Image 1 (tube, rainbow, N blue to C red):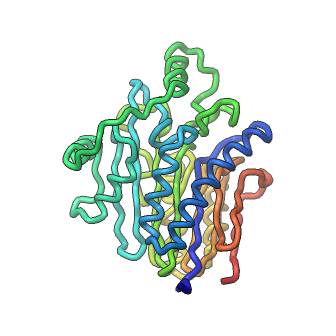
Image 2 (cartoon, helix red, strand yellow):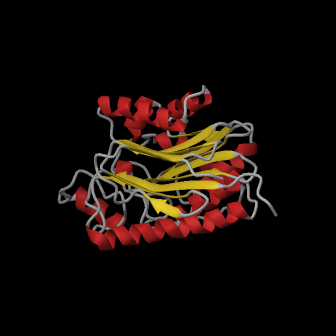
Length: 321
């Protein structure tokens, strides 16, 4: 069957300060590539952009290496509270859950809420929805995250926050608030969707809300889609995802929209990153942080951003159909 549009895909597993050694880079690369391969095969088989995004987010949530789903960081009271959102660019619908606990895949609830008249739920409403849907209770805690919290409580945690990747030998401990996962997809029908999920900042005040369940951190229209990572408050202050998508929707090229938006973020001393694609099939990424853990499939090959020069802040790939 001839494809109507060559599908495109980009995913991320957070942003950070640096990767330690080749072994760490390769471990992260393999984790990301495995997800890209599985999700891209879904797109080739005719899955919708939203279906592909949800599947990709689930796979990333299930990998304890990343701060989302299993392996999420603990808040100041020792509890895990996760947030996730999904936006379908064709329907123009945004849906999400904020600070939900004891579910395996928060993105599943965001997917269900796409068809609900009430599309963003906070902690209590999200828990009630999970019970209504009979989603099994799940403990997302890992030994590493528990030890981080215990060390922080004992004032022995030397770094300010937990690592963005949940293995200390892979990434320098830095801000867990940079730890998010996201997927943006263009399907065979030319439709775009974006999804983002996170375990939060780590050790934050109870009730703090992430950008991941806001249009600031996850947004899509028929023209473009963006998923963000980094310090949530910085992403919210820039309204980054919506800003980039609106600029593309208003006629700016994706590359230009990314360059302008990240120049502004850099000038404002923000710490963040984003992945994006548009309806023409262009794939882009940007960062003000040193490392962006992103991988993509441009229709011909898989690539990533793991070992790009620190000074490289924005990249864009436009592949021939």
